[in-house]
Amino acid sequence: MMLRFPVARPRLPTADAILPYLRQIDENQYYSNFGPLAGAVEARLAERYGIDAACVTTVSNATAGLTAALQAEARARKRNVNDGAAYCLLPAWTFVATLHAVLAAGLEPYLLDVDEDSWSLTPQAVENALSRIPGEPVAVVPVSPFGRPYDMASWDDFSRRTGLAVVMDSAAAFDKGDVGLSPAVFSLHATKVLAAGEGGFAVSTDVDLINEIRKCINFGFFGDRVAQSRAINGKMSEYHAAVTLAALDAWPQTRRIFDDIAAAYREGFAADNRIRLLPGTGDDYASSTIMITREDPLPPGFDEALAARGVGTRRWWGGGIAKQVAYRRFSSDLLPVTDWLAQRCIGLPCYPGLERDEILEIAAIVGDTLRGR
Ligand SMILES: Cc1ncc(COP(=O)(O)O)c(C=O)c1O
Image (tube, rainbow, N blue to C red; front, side, top):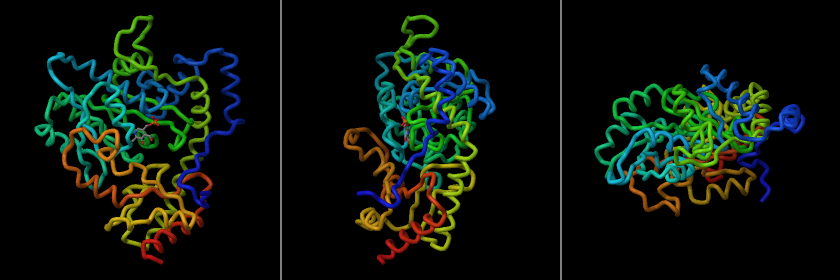
């Protein structure tokens, strides 16, 4: 069904904006393998986050970047084959890619519930959970929900205290991504605020670790053609780097667009105290996702009722990863907050070109539908 307001309508750089970079590719005749355009992306991202270019690596997508970062970290923590399963802790409230990456890195997932205010893991809650893990935990993947800022220093402290590796899934957190010793991995998927179609990057102030990740996304090679570690092919092509550079050129305008969308939703829901936006939305970080919750579970047929009135919605994380058909067998804590969010949380239309008046109309339709009108 064609909806008047689809939930997402990504707008990536135009062909004209990408063309100068494509001409550079023609000239360079370099198409992948950490080419000059990927290097230029890394340099611009490093400038943005105030770190050295050696502290950034581009990757083909965040799932590959998370896999490689976990492989790199797991390698640094030497284990014996008799040690049993190496557990990796992650929140149940995340996109399924986080879990795919944990498994691809050869780790055994253990799902934890999230904090009710931040919708994410906290270092203290994870530390409290350590005694409950059935085997030996070696790593944790906290997730920044829908781009919400996070504090890497507190996770670096956690890592020092506990000896566990931390790999931050900051897939949607381009705008306010924090950098520390532990690696953070970002997505440049078409649905993200900075979009290249597919793509991603990892940052860490530990240059050796970034080099280790570069090895893990390049068949285990580093400087020669000898595989030195378990690895994948997760490199960013020069073509994706070209789109990323054009997206970076347009970032100030893109950020304003997403800020304005969030501000209009806040205005639209200001008078309805039953509906809550994810804290901070439109306040201090740009997100390409508008998520609302309310005190009571969303009524049955809610999504369909909105669709009938032209408003697209998406349960971006479904019921959380414990409910994914492929992955029901994994160990987990009890997940009351995840279950609470899954029943009350829904994504609303968010895309460049959505006007303030249209957003106020969507907010009114959502309010009316909840009131059964
Ligand atoms: C929390 C989270 N982790 C990982 C990913 C995977 O990112 P990518 O599509 O770049 O592999 C996403 C993508 O939406 C995500 O939302």
